Amino acid sequence: MTKEEAKQAFLTSVPVWCAGIKYDEISALIYRKDKARRSLVMTLELADRCGHAVMIVPPDKVSGEGK
Image (cartoon, rainbow, N blue to C red; front, side):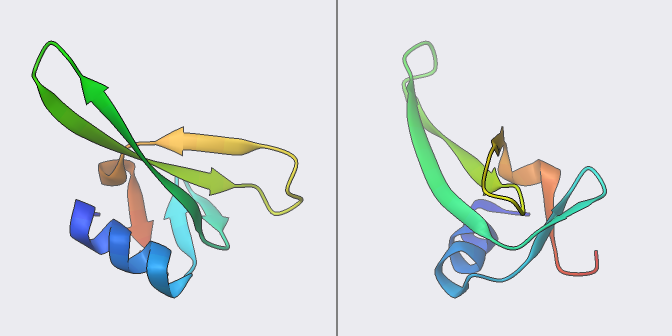
């Protein structure tokens, strides 16, 4: 998933897949400063179905529904 696709998936609350697991939605977009590269790095927060834990992953590890 590209950064732009991740933003759209976040805004529309569509289900996503990561490592063979389906998540109901992306619960947060996280931007961190990478001082070595002088850039921003985006990661995605995926909440588990029970709401007890989250997984933080880069957008390229996530795909849209059924992919």
